[in-house]
Image (cartoon, rainbow, N blue to C red; front, side, top):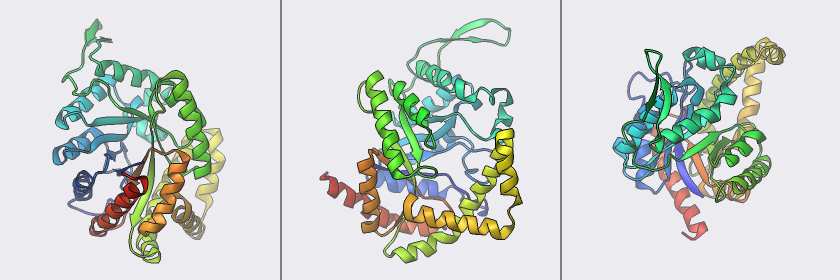
Length: 354
């Protein structure tokens, strides 16, 4: 099981050096045998808002590293023309000498589609077609497009990429159909534990492996995003992450309200219920969520305690743990904690006999 770093910041308070943790973390991952660095695509909200374009942050990561894969987690495919995505990530592939990879998502928040509102209703059905076109362009195949004069033209993407095939994942919060879809189309899966238990994840991975083997060669690849902070004492870690991670959860709560509102009649009741909560109820809900995530859905604590979680994930079939490190803990504290994360990485390698 591999280790990588994942970024999805909720940090709009620092005036300068907003990307120091990204670049310092990338250098750390590169020196310590990590597999990849992932950055997301997010728009119009502090939750993830440091990352409106993962190809831009990916290019920065490529420039300061030599070994780690440089990945998007994720490109919201229906927001973009497939040619543009292929071009940008081919640049990243060239800058990194063949280390680019992309997870794709259909998108879920209506506000994001202010960039391309006509694609909101068909975002799920158009996802695979868009990804297939990007993969064809990456292989240097020409595609038919319509130019400004209304004429059909056959176009090829430039610059040529380094890798003959683009490594691709589908992002899912746990939907069984998406796991199966990824397997059927020979893609990896990028997922998380925010809405699924480890036992449920294990079943989803088994279904994904079966679909992948039925339609493609090999077992595929599953990367799991996991909020992570490793230290020397569990209670010290708990108190270090409690306030920033609670703020992080509260910010995501706001997005859930807006998403429910955009879901029409099905989400109206949920939206009303969430908005009707007073501040005390919201704090209680966030506190409950913090306790659950700290105990069961993140990688928090000492090296030995985190090893227990890693063994559970390995048994579930996870191929890569993507450690989300920028959920609000001060940058200096996170960077100082990288030494403990490196020890966890080495302990896991020793456990596997590498």
